[in-house]
Image (spheres, rainbow, N blue to C red):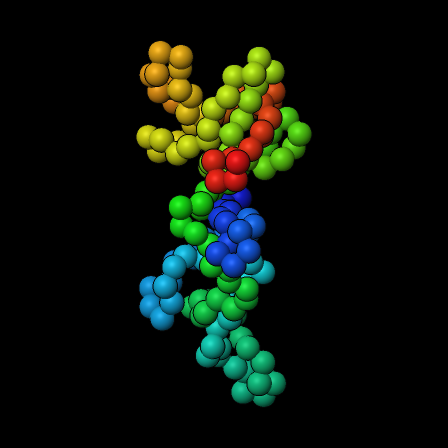
Length: 146
């Protein structure tokens, strides 16, 4: 199963928060990273004798309950499902370097994750990320915290 997670810089303390991306449709402004959340059905069907929930797997989802951290939308990036050579998770916005010192930024471009490299002649090159390609790359920073 795909590991979908995000990070973003918190509004309150300027540190990264990691978890699921959440954009409320009402009541709240901004975007959030939800951490340690669970889905609760507010009105489960109850067994008449034991008063315990029944058919829980068939119940419609309820509401998410947990910790929601407001983040700056400009800093939100998705995990690309790969790690660098030091086994650190790579997210959009990370800056990667190879052993030759060449540097690029992780971006989502044309429906895939890529390394964006600006060449000496000022042309922009997007190289699709593949797991083997990342084995000697190292995160040296990110575009949001320099």
